[in-house]
Image 1 (tube, one colour):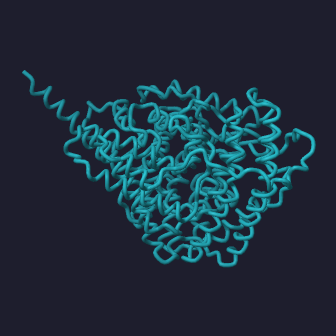
Image 2 (tube, helix red, strand yellow; image 1 turned 90 degrees about the horizontal axis):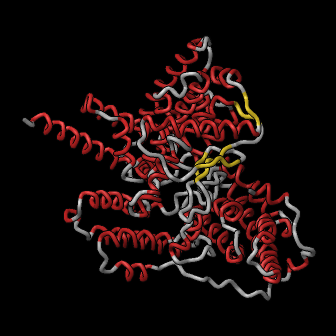
Image 3 (tube, one colour; image 1 turned 120 degrees about the vertical axis):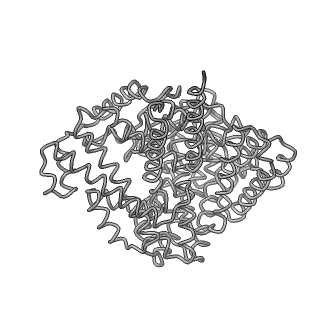
Length: 613
């Protein structure tokens, strides 16, 4: 982690080498991502199964940072020594490759495939078609914002400070090679920002105000204190296969990169962001020419369904009303004067009355919740992932990181485990991110005998819908029976996901201002000013993503209800969940079709049994 790295004592004596990098040899890539011609050549004459696997593996190589995150460098026969290329030419060639793969896929005769391969075909066709549908909107996203999960510079920073392995001499060499490329990558991001600004797309000014301090901090750091250099220096003494002379050379190269490449590049990025601030707009991608069409695309992309903004907005309003009623009923059961208290006060009291945990007790409670969930979830799941999940400290928390394929790290639930936390939201957060939520769905998919694309690509309508549905399963199976405050925490999360659908569509399709979004969101959810502001800022720079939770949840609940009604006493919840999870990662629309087929199959079997003499 960044804070731990910068606190370590810098190893080695003098850092006078920092300005003496001009005579170092230039970076020479050890491998090159496949270009369009290479992709065409590699895909010629392949069987269907070979095409599915080869096309995705070739495509992955266009994104070297993803390869490292997935732990697939050795599997793909490459090194972890390249950064993503954000130059316009590279991005456009990647788009050509997407179109080429989609065209090749459509040339296969779906009707000639087995039923299982037809399902693979449908999922892959949706995936590649979705990528191609995005092509007209090349300059509509925000390459840099305050939100690290979408901001290119922050994703690379996370990669270099937390994810890139540093357990061998080769790892260290790869790391330094990446540091030497960072200037070119940031210049590519700057060019991407300029191209979007020329098209009228600039990140909202409130997001820029939050993003700039972090970039300026990196721009102002003394080269000797550059966190990338510090991380390398702290790791080198632990590398048993590294010769002392080689360690010195790596430190010299990294120091030169910090002084001559990295810090100057961050200064350029900071200057560009500051200049963009003058023309930065209010929130809402719908305010941009063509933004309404882009938002329509994003709703389909994130939900996996063909829904209009109006459909999602109305769904959100209905869900908010439903959950608010459940909140007030739960509060009344606790003896609160529910009808007379604003939602915010109800949750404030529940937060306080539910108690607080601090530091080691937070981690212990998360560990206890996950351990219990492993046992209790077998009431409605037939199997759990073999991959373990651990709790890792994060300043903010609330995310799941899947295990890399090379087995170098377990899956992780990033959680705030330092300081003080109200306990009442902890159970639901743990269930959402681990068991029976994200860890179950994502890790099981990774462990299945499926094409790589269905093991590693997430379709958020299903992925986030399942995690929210998993929260509901915990409640339905009595996990909150003796935890009334935890149940209110569950409802607060569910209410937040419902309100997201209203606010996201309001901002991006209905012309809401920031003030209107904040007013609605705070009143609907009871979130504090600080948390509501953070949430609304997130929705502003990641249009459409926030609706995937509520839409997916509502669809999965509806599908289960339909199956129960159709099958009656023959409905088996565990078998239903096995069917949902068996296909790996797929678009939500495919899940709908699968449930219909599942109900028909079970009904047919029942009819056949009934007709037997």
